[in-house]
Amino acid sequence: MRRSILIFVILTFSLIQVEAQIQSGLDSEGLQLLSSYYSEKEISEIKKIVCFIDSIVLSENFNSNLDSAYHYFLDKLCKEGYETDEMLIIDPDLNKKFLSSLDSSVVYDIWEKCEVLSVQTWDTIIHNPPDWPCLEFNINGRYYEIIHELGKDYEYFKRLPGYIDDCACISASIIMPLICGNESFDFNDFNIRLWTSIVLLCLEEPVEKKLDRYLEKMV
Image 1 (cartoon, rainbow, N blue to C red):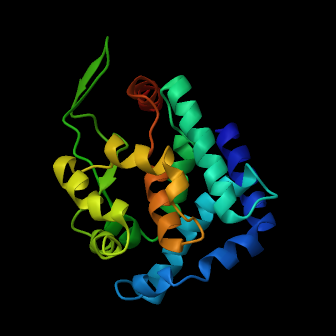
Image 2 (image 1 turned 90 degrees about the vertical axis):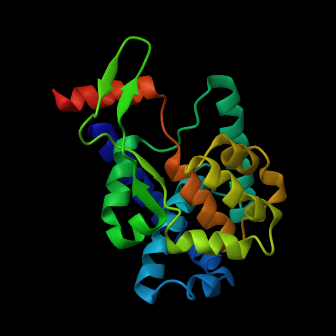
């Protein structure tokens, strides 16, 4: 708990330090596309998602511009993923706290709660776990329509609906080309950073660690 609070304070401080750079990154034509689907109030909430991830990315490389900072950050994340088989950038409790601070109508337009029938590791199985923390991409939300629009200009986004429809989730086929193939993306583009933020917020710890955390809270 104390660690989560400390991380939250650090990220808040980082956000203040890089505010000018983040705000400059919000002045983008990408916001015009959002305005066709979301109200001004909803866009304000969506900006918070991007600002949150911007602050984490820039905290790793303060002296860099947004585009360079994202490339540096994702390259590092990719390397760590290959070395440890984990790609977790945000403490799960902090992740939950942040998403809970947003307007729920925006959160559940982008994501939706999973219905988990069972959770199994090599030595444990739980059926119908109550309040199991799980979000998956909402294919019925307005943001899914935006992905189709982005597919008109970006080959990566053109392929996304096929991957998402196949598994109704953000799978490795979506994650790896973004994180480990980041050299082909321009992170000055707000829409690229928004999708990256959505993907990074979906990254989870291994199920064994997640189950241990879950069981500790259930005691």
